[in-house]
Length: 397
Image 1 (tube, helix red, strand yellow):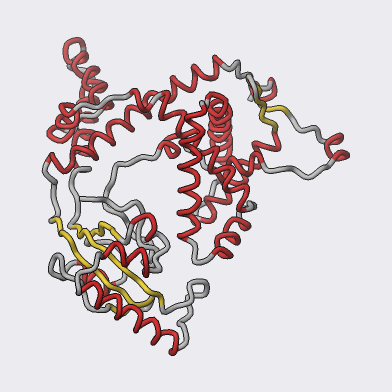
Image 2: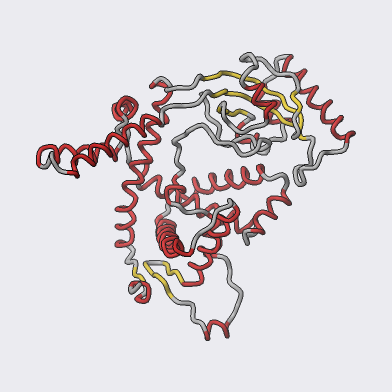
């Protein structure tokens, strides 16, 4: 069953069904907004620079990072967190700064290692990413205002998205593509909850069983091992889900959320009614969704989603998704957001899916777990290869 790449934008934020896909950039913990802030042009301030020199924080082959760049990156990260309703406490700031600096170093090095093929693939991915982000905004103007609030222009956002995807591509080529996960490993996870961490801890526990079976270390190791296995097996349990297609035509102003005038609402009602008639006549749902739906993500998803029973979505839609007979187009559904049409392809009951359906996701999860384990050593080797040196003032901290 196809999983959605994004949720329907007309719906309020909802918890997604558990998925194990981990985007490489998330593994790096680095986002284009942070890069943008770090690289944004700084206004000339010659006199200030004379009074307050821009301290060198770190340097390496082909790059250097100065205090103003690091502070800008930290500020951008804080702004992004604040936009998500989160904050950084003073006690967390040193750790946050250290982590961001590491990520900046990592990015500077990987950008130098990019090949022509890496750049071509990154350009394609970045263009797609930017187009998707624009579609998710109610309008071009709204998209620009969002960026402006983060101190960015659309051009800078696109440039940093390209850098972001280039970092991903280099990691993909140099590290991720070389990691193999077998069907046997996936089945071992499915049946016994074994992943790289469990396998490593099992080796330690087995050794303690022979040398120190009476110690607290052995007992604690066994307990932790059991907890990890149970947690991994719990990942396989999925809530009831519906695989659906959806078309929406708004009856609200997407900038203000205020209802549209009655005459416009009536016009839109007539429009979706015509779409409903064409669907019932046998026309392709995806084709009509791309043509008529005002869902910002429809270009990416074709209006197709997988929705969990407990998802926080519009009640009228949830009722349709979990009651409509499969392969039948709904009547026009009215919500406070607009008019909707839905079609249900399949409903999956809650529980552990068959191995054949879970295998792909398990392999992706195990691959990313192994990538997480390899990244620190890979980064350390890169720092050595590129002669990374911290400023003495920072080394003393």
